[in-house]
Length: 495
Length: 108
Ligand SMILES: [Zn+2]
Image (tube, rainbow over all chains, first blue to last red; front, side, top):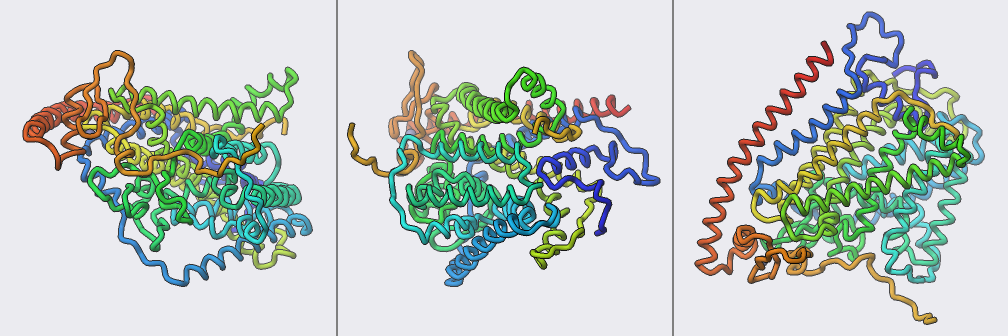
């Protein structure tokens, strides 16, 4: 741990970090550290070859998984462990988390607005990007979803009256899809990580909007159907090994929560009968009302999961030369830059959603099944979640490690932070670790899809044949996103 | 214009009981052959799939004939799976060798 030259550090932005990741992946080719004296001659692996390898890993993992066709064995792997009774201390823990959440939000607003520290020493920036979005999110999919307790907006909304106006049923959870895309757009087009005041302003705006929504439509409706942040954590939390159930907690393999079987024990995951259906419940529900509802229950949920995956890619895409070359002519032609970004975000989402729906329609055909393709879309969407989490971990594990000493130093003195806090310089081999997170996410995704296929289809060959279109789409996606990760960082133009 | 408030409902209607979710929603193309399950009415394109389904989902209520058909079909499925797995292994070898080949050329 050293206090390195500023110019060597990635910018304190998500985009900057994506760039840093891409560079470290080029093991030694364009080493970020110019002064790596006496290093061995670097082996140059071109980016297309990295991409090809990623695609091959996806295909090979499907091939290996297809060797396991014993339904009972597949179920046994996904079976959840015993239920741990939650002690009374849980209520106390919830209250403590709620307090932490509210104090954190307050700190972001107050420090962001009134403490004139640069981003790298600003508690508002470090709390939002390093502690919350990088660190906390990781705990949600690696440990369990604590957001319903921590969520400061929900805590604040709890002390307000509510009009309980109905949100039209036909909207389902589509508002949250729009909200997620809107948040990502805002994050990409504005310097949210470099401008503490702007960040605090956005936090205030988000608080007001959220509280207004909770007052009008009721806290439950708002946080379960509209608030994109709560929805992101709900889906990420379903991946975690620890799942909340009414009686306490259950522990299982990562991803097993995506495949919880239905039955009287509901989210606990013990099958009532061997015919138990796939019930991707996740046990993420903090309220009993969720019980019996699948994690992905309709086209709106599918769209949200696809949007979550697409946004992890979009971030990297806008900082490539390809994007600069595409956006340039559009802007010269007179299109407003912000609209160009929005069009790319929405268009790319449409492309991903369309691609996934097409793959599901083809899966119905390649399996030779009469199960509707809408049902296949719904059932297989959970397999995208580990992939999204893998990319998140790849992007933000290094980011968190890099800035965590700064976070600790600034936390100790938020109002008069050190001017130049310590940062960790990650070694070159960390790029390989990040790459392995991406691969792990894909492997888990292949396994989840394999398990869903064996619950949905009949015999042993039909489930395997159903996977061909998904494997092709996933291999194409992996190659694209790996290639994007390898591209040299180009600042997103016109912003 | 009616001002009657619509009750807040869960976003999407979902299967709530075992029997309904046990039988995923299906749609049969016009004019396609249908072999329906006698117990849960799930349609299948071939009687082979229906026979397998009977053994997988309704094992405890099969007639002796249905059981015999299932066991026979299961044997066929396992034989076909063996051939399938041979192809899978061949494909794994192909992927690994192909990739090594590309690496050897690209890094030469
Ligand atoms: Zn049946």
